[in-house]
Image 1 (cartoon, rainbow, N blue to C red):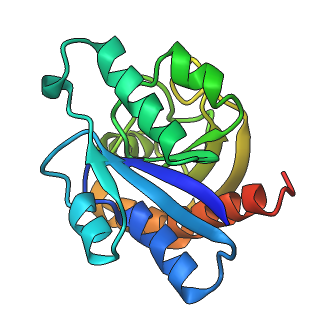
Image 2 (image 1 turned 180 degrees about the vertical axis):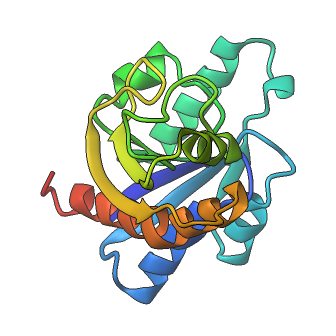
Length: 197
C-alpha cells in the first residue's frame, strides 16, 4: 500500500474526494496514513474520524516556534512511514527540513490554472474573486509539486473549467471543486502510487 498524509486547514472537501476515490475503488493501493490539521476546529478532522483515519493537529499556538512545529510534524510523517504528502487547503508554509526530506514527494491542489492566479494571497475564495475581476473565459485547478515558493512548483496536472455569465465567486468555487479539483487530485496521487510520474 502506498501511504499518504493529507494536510488540511479547513473543511476538507478535497480530503473527502480522496477518501471517496479510495473507498470507491478508483484510487487503488493507496491508504491515508495521517490527516494533519493546522486547526483544532477544522471540519476535515470530523471527516477523518468518520472514516477511521488517524489524525493530529499542528496548530501554531501549540508550539513554541515554527521550527518545533515542523520538527513534530516531520517526526510523525516519518513514524507513519508516509511516502507522499498532499496539501489540501493547508495554510501552513512548510520549512526547509520537510521540503528536503520529502523532495518531489509533496503536492498541492490549487484552484486556478497556474501560473495564473497563484502566489501570495491567492487561496480560497480570493482566487475566484480575482478570476472574475480579470474577466477571463476559463479557469480550473492545478496539482503541482511544492517547492520553496508559493504555488511555484512544477505543475503535474491541470483541468480547465469555463467561467459562466452570472458566476459569483461562490458558484465558480463550487464548480471548480466539483469539475476539476476532486478529479485531478486523486488522479495525481494515483500517478505516484503507480510510479507512473
